[in-house]
Structures are given as structure tokens and as C-alpha cells.
Length: 305
Image (cartoon, rainbow, N blue to C red; front, side):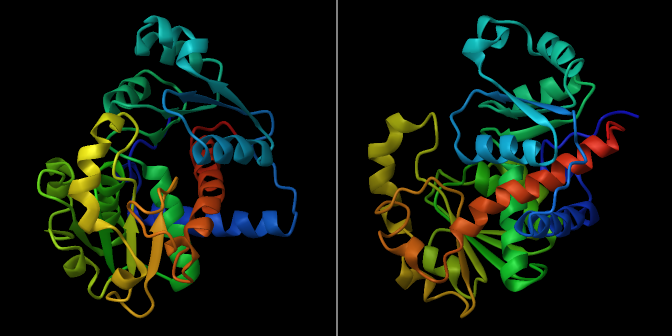
């Protein structure tokens, strides 16, 4: 049986994605009750990092250990990937020794190329286009606090980046309406908007986007690799800061999420993460539980459990 990969939310059916959320909640309960559960004993996850990380590394490494396996951190400077070995060759070799591989990189094509030559599951830990693992955690967090997100309204405020692209896919897969407010010229990629036709509305005014929203989310104004644009972006994105006052215009039961790290005083007001409507810390912890559910699902499907 060929390996199942998780390169985007579209690699799973809506039913599978819903199951992953429920399984993440179950695994979270097991950990909270200190129940030992090791279905991936003696299995090894390779973690390729071309972008720096806190939550992705800690959650995948801790998660794999908690499931009874091990994780290996691989950076380009420590492997032949940093010396020009073709991605296809690296994928063939690594997948002959590992049970699953997570990649956090820049160009999304690298993830696609690696998966095309891997005989074990490949997980997109983040690319410039998409961040599907983060959306699993976001959807689990919303479900824990408010139940099903189906039919709800979600507002994305700020840059139309990889998180915004992935929210567009989530709108299709989890069946909610997404309103995106971003400056002109910073829209999400057209291909993801077209893919989510009927589920996504683009606006320029953040107040219009949050009106009636049950979930409001944002991200930093300059992602990794865009630091030289920060000064220009700071001025352009200033009207898109999410504050308590902006949340007041959303639904009375709105939740606020941020994938972190947050730049207080920039994309969010200084006090926003202290607001009771903010669930960013639950959201961050759920990276661990949602990804454990994903690892269990993918490795089991590959026949490696």
C-alpha cells in the first residue's frame, strides 16, 4: 500500500479531518490522565527544518516520544540537503530508514518533490504556501471551546500568507465561511481562493470582516524571509491590527487565535492575548495533540504500526 502524505488539508476527506480532531481530543485526555499509550513504539520520525521553529519542533518531537517512538532533527547544514543533494535522492534514502518524515521549508514544491519520491508518509510542517498542521490545531481548539465550526463565520485579518491560504482550504473542508481582510496587493494566492469558491470573501475593511464572526485569526505582518519588507509593511498593515475593540464588533461568543509567535503592538494590540476571548495558548498546545493524531493515522495507514 502506498504511503499517505499530508501536504495540505485537501489530502484528507472532510470525514478524516473531523476524525483527526476528535482523535486529538482523545489523545489529549489520555495525556492529561497520564495514561501510557505507545502505538508507535520503535518507530522513527525524521524532521527536516529549513525554517526556524519552536512549536513545530517541540510538538512533533515530544509527540513522537509520547507515542513511544523517536524523532531525529535534521537541518540542511547537518545533512547533504545543504550541499546540493537532489531532493529526490534524499527522499529515497531517508524514507528507506524512517517511518515518517516532516518537512518545514520555504518553497512548497520541495514538499511535493520529496513526497513524490518517499515511500513513507511525508507531512508538511510548513511551507511558504501552506501550514496544514496549524489548522488542525486551530480546528481542534475551536471544537473544544464552541463545538462544530460548520456553518460558522471566520475572519482572517492581515497578510494573505500561508496561514490565510490554509484557512481557505479549511473553509471548504470544515464547511465554514471565511472573510479575509488584507491590504490590496497582499491577497491570498489566487489558486486557493478559486479552490475555495463559495466559501471565501475578500474585503479591505477589517471591521467588515469581523462583523458577526465566530472566530478571528491573524498572523505576523512579515513572515520568515520577508524581514526586509517589515518597515513598509508596518505602515501599510497598521489599520489591520486586531484589538479588543475590533473583537467587540464580532459575534458575542467570538474566539481569537494567533498561530504565534506574536508581535504585540503590531498585528495585535499589547493586551489582546490577555483577553478572555483569546485562546492562543490552547491553540499552541493543541499542535501536540492534533499532530499525534495525524502521526498515528498516517503511520497506521502505511502499515507500519
